[in-house]
Length: 336
Image (tube, one colour):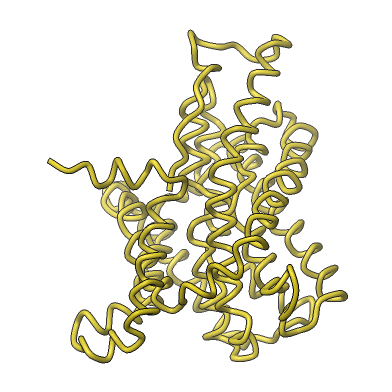
């Protein structure tokens, strides 16, 4: 029997990256495939928003508002740290970069939208994989649902609006929160419903990744590769260090969770497209921004485990954490 999933996951962020590239290849070779196939298949190929609604609903069911104060404090601190940092960077770049992004030279494709989307959300699957590989990190794992809400376009839209970079009508802002809120309500009212919908997150990633890829083409991905690598490296080391400081000095923990959250979420790849649907002014940069964010997902999925486990070993050497057997020597395979 073929081990398709196992082989795909050998690629960092594979469950997101591989379907996305397949979608881009199909769109490059057959740009009107959705029109030719029509029906259910054609509608699916351009139906990113519907799949994302279900995905964000599933994410919302994970959030338990009755969690302890320590867990909530860590999750909310990581959430606000990531979002505020991304906002400050976006405001700064907006003063430097043209509205249509960089269109020539080495940094072709670089835009405020691309950087903001890459910095705004952490890879939850990777974070949980790291925290469950390392012993005695129950609080860190439990904190994940609180900052998982950053995966959607809501905070990106808020930042763009407050910074005067783009305007969005309130109904559009509210619509991005609806699936999260519905998920929180359903999951909070019935834990069996939480258990039912929560596992959908991983299974839906390849489906919306493909539809996002179908909105791109290979030329766009190749042109944005170098910028995407640079953005990915900056996401890991800049956001990682800021989150480390917050986790250590605000939450009064050891800072490990900060480094584990220093990545770009796979779901962030969808943000530029959703933003462009809400505000046509971003259509010119949405394609290249998507490619840059996808590359950042890949790069951060490689670097974040390396940096996190290096820092964990430093904690072990200094006797600041207890270690069970050889856990310190393991570097987990990056998750989706």
